[in-house]
Amino acid sequence: MVGAQNTSRLQKQLQENKRQIDLAREVLSETLAEKKATLKTISAYKSQIALQEEALLDMSLRMNELEIEIEEAKEEISGITAEIKRLREDFSEALVKGYKNSKRMSKLHFVFMSNSFNQLLKRMEYLERVLEFRKLQLALIEEKLEENSTKIHELNARYDNLESLHTERESETEALKKDQELYDDLVIKLKNKEVQLREELKKRDELNQELEKRIREEIKKSEERIERRRVETAAVSGFVRGGLQWPVNNGYISESFGRHKHHDFKNVTTQNNGINIVCRANSEISCVFEGVVSAVMEVPGMQTTVLVKHGKYYSVYANLAQSNVSGGQELKQGDAIGVVGLNESGIPELHLEIWEGSTKLNPSLWIRK
Image (cartoon, rainbow, N blue to C red; front, side, top):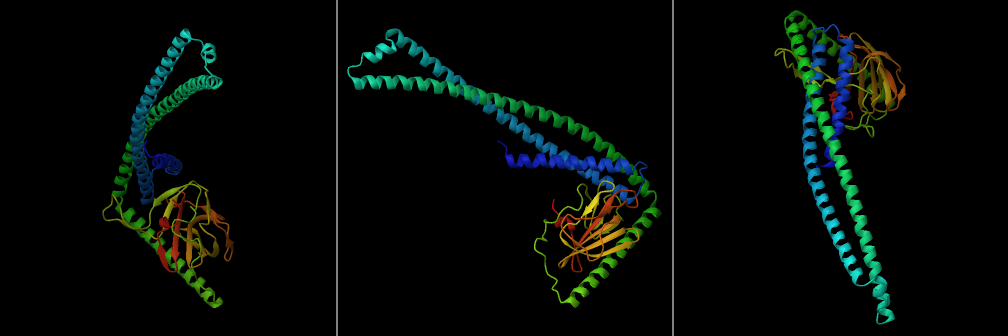
C-alpha cells in the first residue's frame, strides 16, 4: 500500500491549503472590494494565487495516490475473493466426504467398533478434531467475507474521495483562472501609475528604515540596562529554530523575509526585515516565546510596535491597532500582546521580526510551521 505516513501528510497539507485559501478569500473579499491597485493588494493576491497553485499540486498528488490505492485494493479484494472460493470448495469437499463416510458407517458405530478402550478414546478425539476443524473453516470463511466487505467499503470510499477531489480541482482551477485575471488587471493598473508606485516604494522604504532605527535604539537601551545590572545576555533555553509559537491563531505569510525583486515589476525591489502575516480583522497577537517587554513604541505608518526580549533574542510585533502590554512586563509564551491593525491598503496584517542582538533573522525559520 502507499505509505500511510505520506498519505496522512498530504491529507493534512490539503486541509491546511484549504484553510489558508478560505482565509485569503475571506480577507480579500472583505477588505478589497474596491480592488485598489497597490503593491500590498497585488502582494495579497499573489499570495492567494500561490496558495491555490500549491493546493492544486497537492490535490494532483493525492489523486495519484488514490488511484494507486484503488488498484492495490482491487488486487487485494481479488485475492481475498479467490481465497474465499478455495476455502468454500475445501469445506464443501470435506462435507461431501463426511456425508459419504456417514452413509457407510455412523459416528457412533465408528466409535464402538474400537478394538480397545484406548482406540475408542482416540477415535472420539479424532471426531472432535474433525468437528473443530470444520468450525475453524467456517469461522475463517466468515472472517474473510467480513474482511472482503470492509475492503470493498474502503474501495468505494476511495472512489468517492477521488471523485470529490476531481470536482474540487476543477472548481479551484476555475477560481485560480479568475484570480489570475484579476491579478493581471491590477498589475496593469499599477504599471500605468508609475508615480504612485514610486511613492509607495519610497514610503515603504522610509517606514522600514524608521522601524529598524527605533528597534536598534531600543535594543541598545535594553543591552545598556542589562550591562548596568551585570546580567549576562545569553541564549534562552527553548528559543530555537522552528520552536516558536505562531503569533496568531490564523493567517498565512503574505510577504517573506529579505530583499525581493517583484515578479511583475522588473525595476521594483522590496526589502522586508521580517515577515508579514495576513490574518482576520481584530485577530489577537500572541507572544511567540516567554520574555520581557522591552519597549512599546508608536511608529508612524506601523501603528503600535511591541519589542519583547528573550535573552539575547528579540521578537518584534508591528502594525498593532492596540497593545495590551507595557514596558518591563513579563510574558509567557502565548500571552496576548495586542490586536492586529490594518495596513495602508486596508488589509489586516501583522509585521513580525526576530533579532539576535543587532542582527536581523528570518522569522520563517524560527516560528513553527
